[in-house]
Image (cartoon, rainbow, N blue to C red; front, side, top):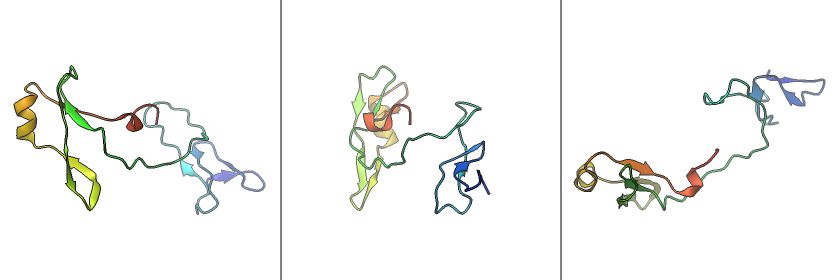
Length: 105
């Protein structure tokens, strides 16, 4: 449905990620508001599974509060209580992500 060419070897305009096991052949572009011209990329999909390096901080970045792991059986959930954050970060606070979560992804 979302492919073109005699042998269905490329995605139609507005679609990307040609995969043999995809019933429609290609996925619809979702450029996340970055562009109105999407095109295929050779980037790969992957999951970051390490939750180390996350913390709450103030706007200046000088104060850092480490969150806790909510459940050892679910290592991808971290949290910090609002009251604890407000005691140390009076004027508001923000999550600071570690390097694997940053950049053009």
